[in-house]
Image 1 (cartoon, rainbow, N blue to C red):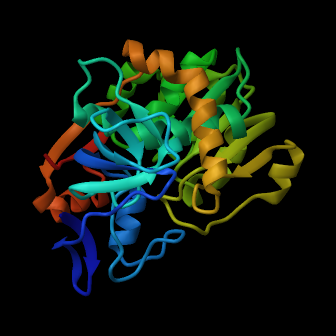
Image 2: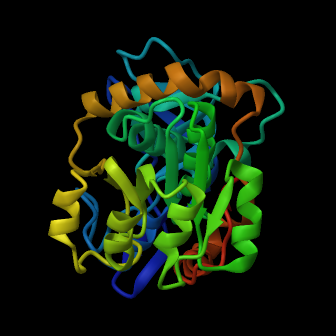
Length: 324
């Protein structure tokens, strides 16, 4: 099978043996995959959890048909149309734990659309609902809102009863597009005083919950924009892994600062995250209430320019790989 692999000189397409599912896994004949920031990290030769280094297979999520199931799998059968978070998803075949997969709802959702959902759904439900403890009527700010996970986070916030959803982007065109994905107020974080815009939108109180994909350059601004007894959930570090942090302001506001990642979670923990997400969100997925825009589609052979597009921050929503 064809698969995207990190070689000595960068990402390349190689011929690899078709994987075989373990007892708890399913084998997916991949039709489409979508890019995530972790893919660019691995492609740059940086270790990301257990994945990294020369020979690492790239990709985090995909959609397609079940080709085979492991001996312990009860919920899927060959021929099922599925989407899943799956390691090595930029390939003609991928295996994943059955607890990370979902049947594609109905017949109208395309494989390209389905490939955009798994990581965004599980990541942002965990960040907004489980770690962030969003309560109905609270306010929510998503840092880095024009990414796929950011757009999904705003929609989840609305669905779970947020009274006001704010989203950030430094690009005017992308800020204008946020309103179609649950955003009530778009914030330009390139402005030095952007926390004041957040306070103005919230009647001077600041937001109850911030879900942050940017980190370093906005860390102190987040503390300023956060309400007393608010929560900040650190999901991504697009702006860097190190920066200044106002410990006194953090303590003064009694803010809960929470770090989340899937890199150190066990298969059992991921299954529970997926189960909790499905309980809250699956009806909205099935009805089409939750959606993500596809910025551009590439062929598997063009994985390098696809990764370059993500690295250049030229997309709004998802970048998709057409494997079929």
